[in-house]
Length: 408
Image 1 (cartoon, rainbow, N blue to C red):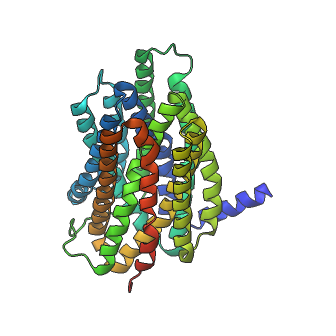
Image 2: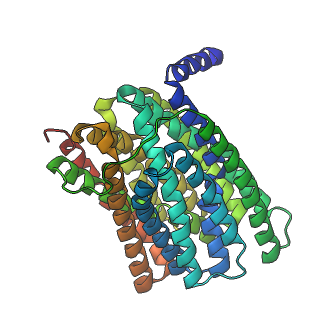
Image 3: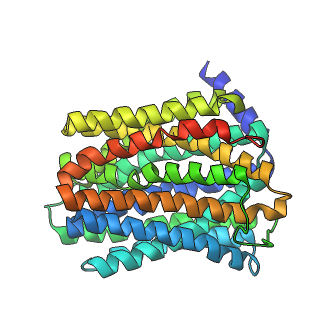
């Protein structure tokens, strides 16, 4: 039975175009390093500052850097190859992480500076990653590709957070200096992994791309609705990038607990994503989106009612599942809108930039809400209530999906 399933998946993977297979393989390098670049970077900053507002501002600066880099990347594409920019963005993320972990102390200036630098690096990677996905996928094949992309990242995240968290904390006496040395060592290791991934993508054959225009001059009615969709999605997504980590640190323990709970949630999510991705069709993307929002609301409600170890674990599992379901449903929806609205493939990049600007505008609004709530109520009330408020707000996506049609 198992061998039959594996053969079937291998045949389906082999049916993808060769560039699509190469791109998926390159995602493995990013998946290995991703927990250190996001999850444990926030854990490091929390360990350094113990300040919810400062960590939130770092994430807000990161989001601003991502949005700006999509514009910068448009100009870089006119002078450099697409695959090289993708590879550079992949590597610079680990370099910026290594520099951040080398700081002896972290205050507001350091938070904002490295937030922007890290965001710029991530944005260069993601802008070119999105272009490559658009280049190598379409239709039902895009559904399978995006589902497999999420499944690969999720399955890698089952092992990586647990191993990294265990390495950072196991056998230490509680001395911060020892922990910071391990953070720096892991940054060196992930940099090496990213270099391998960059080499792999550069040696593979992809078409170059030079955008005629970078910023969108006039949005159609269809794309205006897509802008609203991305901004609303970003409101909850932004806080979900760091609040779960802080909740685990606050309620459960240090890095080992963060890694273990993240791995458990990813294990559950990976199984669910495999089932959903293998069966998802164009017609039921809205249903998958609804399942994702429901999972986020249920997880946040559990945390709000039971602000404890158990509540935190249930929240993280359902939040992780919800975010991933939103990802595999929303990405194909927006990519299809781009295909329907543009005149030809050379006009894709303004849509990619505009999509990221409105996504990060929503993320920054979410960050602003967290900062405001924290200033008014304190960190514990914020961590307990903000996820539920933002998850409920995200439910408005369900009303927008039917409008994202060419003649909607």
